[in-house]
Length: 370
Image (tube, rainbow, N blue to C red):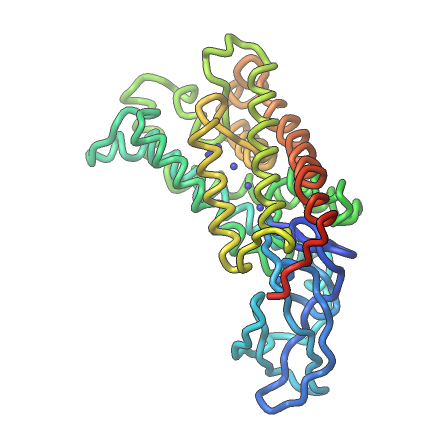
C-alpha cells in the first residue's frame, strides 16, 4: 500500500472510540492467589505496564480485563490478555522504570511502524523489481495481479504492525491516527510530537531495511530497463497518477477520503456500543480495511493514508540518492501524503462520532461487557 493503526484513551480512553476510563491491568498472581478488586479498564484495553494506561490501538476492539494486584515480592506471575484470559508468564523486570513511560511508548510506535514499512515497502519491491529480475516470472507492474499482491501485502503489513505494538501503545503507527484521537481527547497533546517522531523514524528504518535486502534487485531492474532511480522510487513512497496532469487538488481529495474511511472503520471497531469484535481480531480487520481502501482508491495516488508511511521512506530514498524523485517529488507532490491524511483522519473520526456513536448513545445502547 502506499498505508496504517489502534486506539485508546490516555486519560479516559475507550478503544479507538468511546468507552469508560480505567487503568491498565497489572500482573496476575499465581493460581490460588487471592485476586484484588477489579477495575474497569477502557474499551479496547490490551494490557501493559502496571498503573499506566496505554494509547488506543488502530482499530482497537476493547475487551475488558480485570485488574489484579501482584503479591509483594513476587516477580513471577501470570498475565491477562485483552479477552481476560490468564496465561502463564514471568516478569523480566520490576514494574516502573524508563520503559514504563513515554520512552516505552516511543519504542513501540517506532518498532510497530518499522514492521509496517518493512513488509509494505517489501512487497512493492517484489512487485516492481525482485520478481521481474529473479527469473521467476511476473506480470507487468500495476497489472491486476500485481496490484492485488500489493494491496494484500500492505494489508498484512498493517495487521502485523498493529499486533506488534498494540499491547504497549495501541499501535497508532500512523500520525493521522494519533492526531485524530488527540483531537477527540483520547490521547494527550504532549504525546503527539513524540509519537510522530517515533513513527517517522520507524518508517525510515523500515525502508532502509528494504533497501538493504533488495539493493541488488533494484540495481538490476534499473540497469535492465534503463529507467534509473525514477523507475524504482515507487518502492519507497507514493506518486500521483498521470491523469491528474500535475494538479494537486485531486490527489489531496483522494488522501483525505481514503484516510477518513480508515478512521471511520477504526473508530467503529473500537466502539463497544457498536459491533466491536474481540481485541485479538481487530488488527486483522484493520488490515482488511486497508486492503479495501487500496483496491478502491489506490491507483489514484498509491493510498499512503499515513504521513509516516510516505515521509519516512521518502526521506530514506532522498538520502540514498533518489534526489528529486523524493523531494520535491512529482510536481511537488511530497506534501500531499502528509497534509491529506492528517485532514482525513480528523474528518473520519468526527464523522463517526456525530453520525454513528452519538446515535447509539442517544438510543441508550449500552457498551458491551465482553
